[in-house]
Image 1 (cartoon, one colour):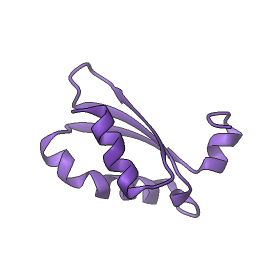
Image 2 (cartoon, one colour; image 1 turned 90 degrees about the vertical axis):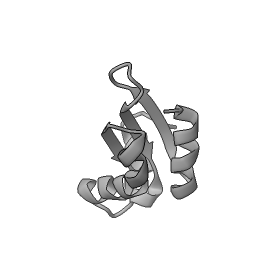
Image 3 (cartoon, helix red, strand yellow; image 1 turned 120 degrees about the vertical axis):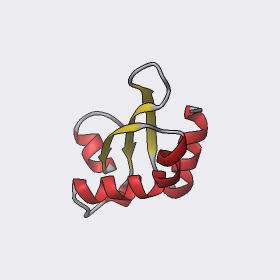
Length: 84
């Protein structure tokens, strides 16, 4: 899995997103993905994760074996000092 390609793919669906992808196991198919986007505003954590999993549906069938998601709004990320 090319992480830059995955980032571009996710940004094509979540236009304002700040995205970080990490390899959790060294196999490049177990990924940690952090997404900060205002498109999550007003949505609970489960709905945020459903949005991302729907976007990744086809990639999960072939290229990605497992995903650990961390999602939040830009306001929440600022509160946590993750973005300015």
